[in-house]
Length: 320
Image (tube, rainbow, N blue to C red; front, side):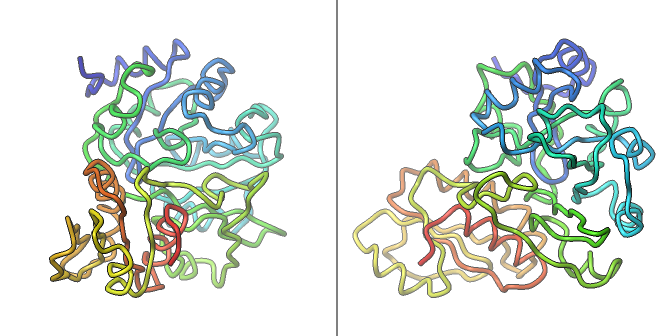
């Protein structure tokens, strides 16, 4: 029996009983639990097999709820919130004492965002507590952008996948922290750097850290298929290295004419970065379930959302 359901009241009942529910956002599906329930939060870490040193993102229904979560909001954080919430941006700010250390990995800051999905916004408005919701996948695996992806991962261990359809942005939120009240990008994501800088000026990028990360999604190896995957800017040369194997190809817009390729997915034939980002994880799921020997992914142009897509592919692959 499928656990995919559009029933918001069922989700409210499960979440209020400390049970996990997968929720839709515009970025990816999240594995959600009550932030004030130690049972629920521990269950998130255990279900995902996520290390406890990796902090979670708190989801709230509106900007006005931010003061209940954080103790200090820099002026540039206010500008960003006004410009991009609801939306695919997470802010890392000084936390209120009510926020459990379990969520923040013992840090004095908390990651928080207002997701831009009507189903989850309605859910958050009806709940008396915010939700922690990292991506609804086993730690390190490909993030889910469809209800079916989540069900495949967790059918027997969570109560419900709240069905909100396919995620429109398709990669995780951009995470922005602050040092001396100046913004720093901790994780490239669905909000392009150029859009951020149009609001607050030049921003620094601190996007990789192996241990005790400042924010989610900063670990070196992440978002990875089980199939051995390579990232390259010379895709024809890479194909030649793997002749005789079942090869899956992931490209931006080019249709490769090579009889040695088993299957190819083109993310955007019209060269649209937003379309490519929205389809990225679904394509990776598809290729990963075709019994291929290798997946070869093409590097994207290194600007706009291309930077974020390259970041995800680099963490998922063996660079070539």
